[in-house]
Image 1 (cartoon, helix red, strand yellow):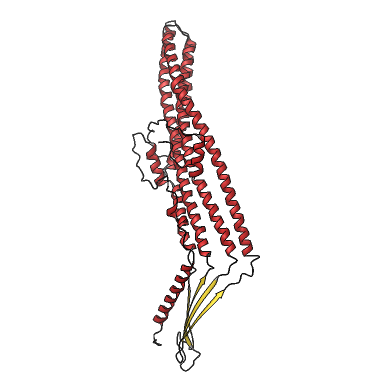
Image 2: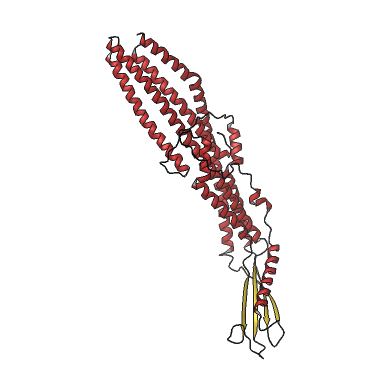
Length: 451
């Protein structure tokens, strides 16, 4: 070796030695379990990201357009995605060995890396050390991180599903408000015609002034309803814009028509789907598994870790020297460290199990609640559409014809008019409630139930 230019040789020797130690230790650690890799996760039932769809002003906006924009731009979905990616990047770090440490130095002259000629005790030296955790520790650390990454992916799925559910619920409210305003406005026009009829009859002496006044009062009541409905419509529009990460005051076209979804699932089928697919349950299951691996890792902490050190000394007047040392740490403070670590991990496992049980209870309650709401609204929709609305419409037409010829008093006709108005609006209210209940079921079963 050239004693006047040793730096390159030392550097190469140090790198090669470090790589050899690291590769040997990595090979002895547990390889990542294929069953816990991100690719082995259940396929996402909600494909992300979805390209944003531009809202065309002037034409009815569909629910699919709004869902696409929400998936592409909602901040909560973006944050959950970044959190998942961050957790996934942590797993390879957990399985990696500590970085090797390389030392270079000399003993001799004050000039760096120079030795004293004729002095056998002076030398140039290189030392490489590598910490080696007890076999199995790195594998367990990787499993803990992998399970946490999987939990992060399911959290991402849950966030996306929840945002979509909120978009759908707000859209159905927006749709109901628009329909209620349209129906109420049409009925206001009809009521004003009835007011004109009552006034004409009063002028020719066939009616009474009370009928005219009552009609005017009803027109004012409808104006009151329109004010409330328009305020509700504005609120729904602002909520939709917020979920889409748009300016709250951005204009939004009127909603497209909503057809009742076909819903034929039983309560037991919904329970089964939720227990198998609910992202929240899947997330909590992964956290239980992660906590179990954490307990195993804590129990491994009683096992000692090792250290391997290689040293090289270049001595000008003597032969070069090589040395290898092996060290081991002794866990003599196990009462305050290792034992407490096991206790901490065990409590964490118990907490994760309780959270899973709590999530299961919440899911069961939410499934039953939304199922009852959906079935009740569906039954009411059928009742309104097949019986109440057609019958009340016929009663109104009959009373209006009878009123014009003086066979029915004005108050009777007005009552029929009020009933028709209320029943038509109630039908769309139940349609909105039905679709909203299904939308709130979707995050629990991780399946689309509405269009």
